Length: 426
Image (tube, rainbow, N blue to C red; front, side, top):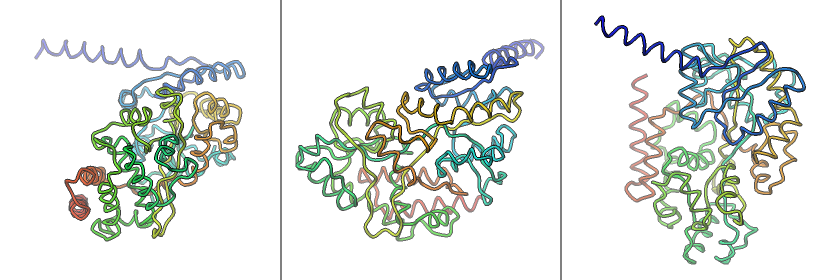
């Protein structure tokens, strides 16, 4: 035991040395920002230099990628009390809530109420906010600053539409219209639809576009609370849509095992006519096939649905460390970063939608404009969140439906069993 203790001491000292050496070395005038957005690194550094020249305050951006590595670094730094001035814990509202309750994230409500919040898309700002009735018992308020916005819609290849005898300027608006378009594509030997459905979150995104149409926000919340069962006819109807799409041979071969990067390659090489993907796809497809002729449209509307179409919208948020010695300077910098001039520069250089709604007119790409005009259709931010195990059963079940291994009713029953199990453990 005496021999082991010195070894453990050496290992502990080595770990602390590594953590401290990778942590921000603060000077009187330096704000340190950790982020994972490697595609924005050059423009961030350009803006940091400009801010330093204007104010005399040094700003240092430090990139850690991929996101899993970044996330682990943030967690380790939080435990060691070594978080930088500005960062983001990433993850869903539940994870952000844990950082807030531990005292690692500043409540920005007082600063936002001074008029700052008025420049942002309201439904985007809510993604780092908490309402009175939130299940995590976080003090109501605004806790993050959105830097830019991304959303998910359906890309379509205009050239392949023309090849199938379809008007490339007319996209399907309804589910039945979507089915008919897919039939015509199949008749010409063209795979209709691809996405990275090997990644469960994309399955969830596509499913939720139908869930909100049929159940609405209130119905989703009641389902999460256990007041509406997954065996309800409305849920079965949602899962039957995937049976219909499977039977119509809409999905690309191997879609349920395909990661999104592979799905992006399938669409970029014109081996599928449509792809569920995010606005980041504009940059991706440009790199893979600069001549690709495409645009986007919303997920199809169910004609008998009670509620409007909703889509996945998210943002790159930055949060302020309340323990920072330069908290005021950090907040001042974020105000400057989200001002019109800086947002225009970010939008033009990164090809992302600006979080500042006042400058959305600077977007030059027709495709990105079509993403931007639908930001108000975002999935609402809910005060409760479905258990990850239930979401997992749903997504795996939809994958099984797509490959013909499960029926809609079987999935509904399995989901309800999992839900009842989770409720009984509370």
